[in-house]
Amino acid sequence: MQRLAPFPLVDKTRSTLALPDWTVPAWIAGIVVAGAALRAVWAFQVGLHPDEALYASWALRIADGSDPALLGVYVDKPPFLIYLLAGIAWLMGNTPASVNHLQQIVVAGRLAAAVAGLVSLTLLYSIARQIYGQRVAMLAVAMLAASPLAARLSPSLLTDPWLLLFMLLGLWAALGKRPWLTGLACGLAFATKQQALLILPLVVAAFLLVQTEITAPGATSRSPRLRKSPSQPRAGIAAVTGRSWLEFGDFRSPFKQRSGDLWRLLGGFTLIATLVLWWDSQRWQWMPSYWERSATTYGGLAVVTGPQLARHLAEWMQVLTTVLGLPLLLLTAILWGGRLIVAIRERGSGAVPTAGANRVQRFDALLGLFMAAYLAVHLATSLAPWDRYALPVAPVLALLLARIVLWWTDRLALQGRRSAVVALAAIVAVGALWAIATAASPRFPVADNSTYDGVPAIAEHIRDSEPATAVVYHRWFGWHYGYYLYGTDLDRRWWQSPADLARQAADQLDRRQLVALPSAEDRQAVEAALKQNGLALAPVLTATHRDGSPSAVLFSIESSAGAVAGG
Image 1 (cartoon, rainbow, N blue to C red):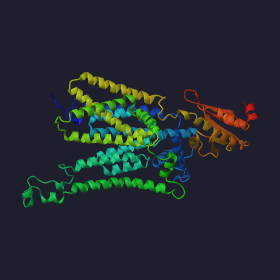
Image 2: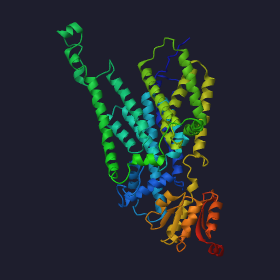
Image 3: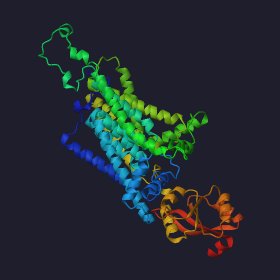
Image 4: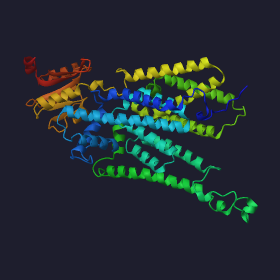
């Protein structure tokens, strides 16, 4: 009976189910095009996520030169995305002339993020091919392209698609022994989102693994001076020890090389991090750092214990099902569980892994450790179960899924169990189709901005048809108004409760007063509070979703008699 190695060989050496080399570029291009189509459709959705609206409004302040360092607003994010959006807004005309113009800036920013998502696909392919071989790389890219979470978050004005791009760029540079680029990628991730601190250890660990391979015993030195000629005559110490004095004198050279590469990585990171620190320091005299501001708005972090833990875990499990879809997530867990059982049973088989298999094992362990640590931080603490926090694990899960599927495929094929191979391929195909259908469904809750579909129409009416002295009350749409009403002199006021709205409105009876309410919200409490102050809501405009159903209603606040007469 043929024994299998405890861990599979690098799949470049396997011919099982291999594709002809000439078809590989066509397959990769097809996967990227399919991923682009799945992402591009969401770049044109009307609604803006509140965070998208907030970042875009900050970008306008930079683009028109009114606040280039953002010293007039409380900022809780690093600068990269904000200045990128500012550059897009500047290129498209930094003075917003209309809501339609502002919407075009949104689409341009989303398309730029979608392109970043496609670059992430190509980087993942290169990373996987270097570690696991071509077949794993192709399947991993297909899984990431079909990921519902990645497909929906990629075309957005959020920070997460760019964070994912720099994470994969850092891994690609680390595997390619490019310390400067690795450091720059880490710095750009740091300049994009605070969660980069959870991702940088993965990139640095991958870099150190590659450096360990370079400096391992028997590794070929880069320096030609350390290569001895076999015909060179030996004398003195070389005649006794079999090693030349040059080898003894420079035995630390590989470690010097590793140290130098680490300094280059640190230099690349420090270059970007210093710019971020300088930018943030401009506001320290009178405003908090973006780190302090984000901690304040987030409410701090704590370890989750007691009755809240079960609910917290359930919410995070629901988020994880959006990464690849529930079927593929379960398949990944089942196949890796079976793989561990096989490893335990074959531990004493005596099979010796090759050098390539050892490298694969190390990266398996690294990816598994990263997954465990990243999830532990989110599951054990009060970090909110927001879908975008799970995006960094999408390429890792795609890699682990592709890796284990092809391991079982090879094992079953070597055992002659072709029907099992076909069944496994069918399960993967069905799971991928499930993921694609989920990503394309308008009912998928990730990055669901449909609640805000009506805001552009409402803002356009306010800009074009309402007096500049009007008071615009907001509770749900404040950040959206900050973007769509940018440059206007309208008096925008937040209301905390129906009673608060009624109190404020009663003091402004000599001015035009407007308030927009989502159609899904019950407005009886608002109407009751206004009625107690002799006021009433008068419909002005009903904004709709694409399917024609109501999205939000704009009301004017009138005296009860005026509202009745207007009705």
